[in-house]
Length: 394
Image (cartoon, rainbow, N blue to C red; front, side):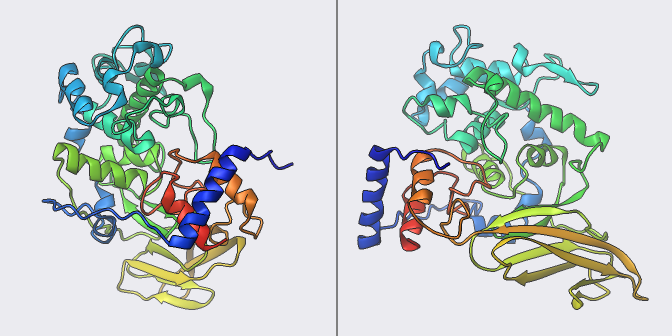
């Protein structure tokens, strides 16, 4: 059964839709001159997504004092700068947000310390840089630049226990819990990378699916492997981590090419709205890549790509690798779920049911693969840009 509409919010958002549809207003960010081009186009075209941050910057737990963290929060006009401890979760215990962030970086409380699979994070190791913690708070819930008290954002501050499929585990709710658990997880991911227990290890090439296509990502260091294990998308989350690291803290942006002489046989599930989709992969130089009998890449190359228009609904697409003599040498499966543009619930229509879902998410940060975010290439907020896109497809 569909949920009941919140009539107040529905009327408000419907009014916004009508205004935008009639006046065609769009919010436009003015360009800002930067030493490093942090645009999304440069990030994608230059393959900066292969190196999101250096290992040193990621785990420099002493990069900021608690006082410096407090000053930074204040400079950004953050609600966290003056947040009472009573609003920072059960584990705050009278501490300020700045102190919680510093303590989490040093694994100074239970949520930020502990062992799993023989990997132990404690005060001897610390977790991650307080700069990396604050970037994560921003990319997940915009908490560094949000000036108002918002319990929903605080309860999901680091996005910990909040999967792409939706919903958050209440066990990890609250700012102090989120910061502790999130910092612990990112350091645990970092320490796990050298062990090669799964695909998220430094030196590996993995396939990442986003709304604009599938691309191979070279995990150039342990920090980058950690971040992709935490957020398996090239954008918006990981793009924002890379971008904010450069703009806020002067991290170096490194362009590292994906250069692998292996057949990419990983299976990937993707979501998209109307339009074309591009699948990119790597292959052995001596092999060829095919789609439905069509040659995509010949011998002598180590990469391939194919742009096509998927069918509406959920469908599988197989890409085959063959040796020089025509023998099979592996396949790659890409499963694409496609909706009409602005058809948030996937019923083939753009109507009040979709508008209700947008209304329920209004003003929130959402995950990269959340359907209610109609412009993930721009941000992960549900805002006027999304409503404008919706109005144009009503």
